Image (cartoon, rainbow, N blue to C red):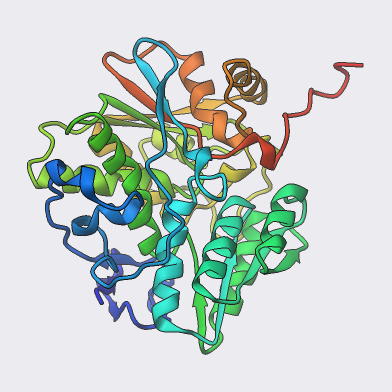
Length: 377
């Protein structure tokens, strides 16, 4: 197996260890992994799952793998220049399957005494499903107020749910305390870098579907930044191997109600600013999946957006509601978090060239966003 490395401290640990964070700074790991070029002309004959990109994925050389045939989601035009990648058509109805399959494969090999995860919903459903596929028992920590449909899905896959009294950050802190116990594998979509190497297949699929190129702009939702950072990984690999001749701009989208990264970007900061200690209270938002006030990989996210020549955009609750209805009337039923990128694109002038937005989670998980109080009847 490859090794974990702390991007701050350069501390290393074998990926076979259950050490879920850097023991010195308690920050998330990166993975000391070097990909090889993926031969585009050989892909048509490969398995129809994300494991088709064997040269680019850790854990890919040992067969068989945990899989539901995830990936290869459709790319459909919304306008002449903007297309949507329908990642809500994944097996558990969200893009989180891309990373969850990697965590489940790693846990299957390590056979820990316990597997835990924390989530506002979609990552939990994905980890629960893939853990079931791998024959693993898992406990998922979720904040109170999590969508009942997502809780139902997690439980249906056989996972134990632990509802934490508090917000998403309190849930994460509770799970991390449990992850410090001996013999526990923390299937964290934030701290474990194998998850990012799964989400990078989003960009590899675009590269394959577009015949060896990428769009000019990739618009991506950002809470903990797992999709954006995975895409940034893929872009650097594809460019480094000479498989693309230019890097796309990465445009990161946050809900206006919870936008710490957008504020830091606008201020020119390299990391989140503000007092130490617990993060301040945040306003409620329909985009619950990206309502993260203190993402552990904040500095990496800001650096990736700046390096690409991209920017941050924020969207209001009204823009989220309108975007969800607009997509539904186009035949695409997406949860409120999953429409944030389309909301941002609709609200701003189109960037030159081609653009792709991800539709990350199915509307069946949450239903339509409620109208503001005082409206309707």
